[in-house]
Length: 169
Image 1: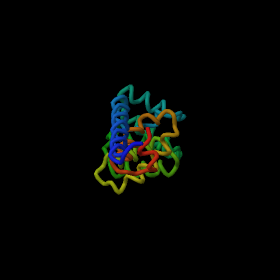
Image 2 (image 1 turned 180 degrees about the vertical axis):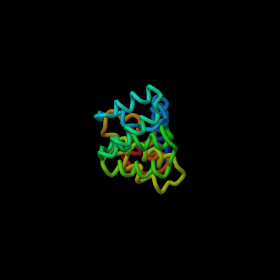
Image 3 (image 1 turned 90 degrees about the vertical axis):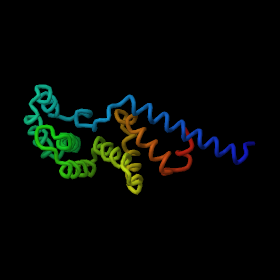
Image 4 (image 1 turned 180 degrees about the horizontal axis):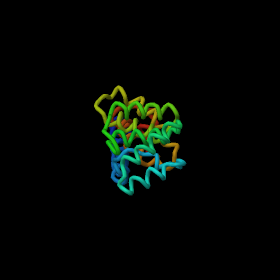
């Protein structure tokens, strides 16, 4: 039988393990936003080819064309280009609007991008939304690992999620 002090210690150790695992996952993945090229996206190879040729303006034009067809991942990809100022001026307001549009349309990449932004921000009142988005992201095998850091950060530091999720590893 473990006393109350032992339970508190075990909980602290679990939180430390979650935090360390999250930091390890983060160190393996780049910090860049998740773009449309991370998912099957008809036409996005044209954007990638233009970027490889260093023709950023053409890449942005193609991305605009693909996003106009309402493909959620193309909208997310365009949001990344707009945020980074690739092929045109950086426009954080437009990028955020595009990300929200892509999230509403079901883009897993956009959900990850928005959740990472919310999870790393100082406004902890946004963490429940980030947690909700990340719970969708971890269902996508290609993105699950990169979602662990913000998920662990929210659950460990913010105390969000079910107790069994926060305390179990």
